[in-house]
Length: 90
Ligand code: SF4
Ligand code: F3S
Image 1 (cartoon, rainbow, N blue to C red):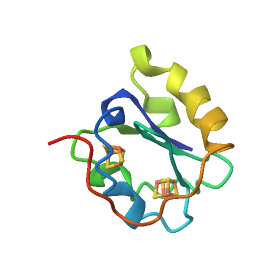
Image 2 (image 1 turned 135 degrees about the vertical axis):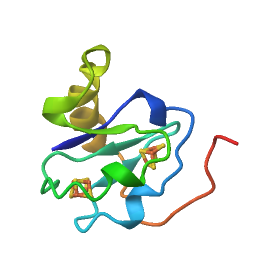
Image 3 (image 1 turned 30 degrees about the vertical axis):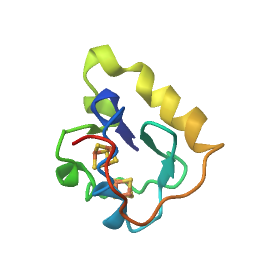
Image 4 (image 1 turned 180 degrees about the vertical axis):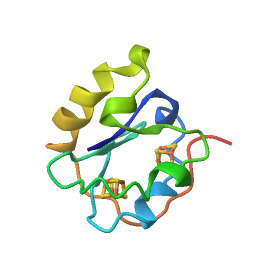
């Protein structure tokens, strides 16, 4: 599955959600998460993120490895987001 990592935290550009064919994105207060149960590894979301927050699970930078588990845990308890919103970042 693809994984949302640290650069999303505090940004939430939400460009990523509009391209996902499987409605994988879940919205938290400060960042989004991808539900690994639903992600089909299409890769469509990765280039959409202006701050390069999205990585394939095998390519997540070492310092952000914890986000693989965080996405799994948080996605399970948060609501789906499929429409773009105003970002938190300027
Ligand atoms: Fe959705 Fe594809 Fe991104 Fe997975 S890789 S979250 S299916 S757009
Ligand atoms: Fe976050 Fe990038 Fe999507 S900042 S909301 S992963 S477009």
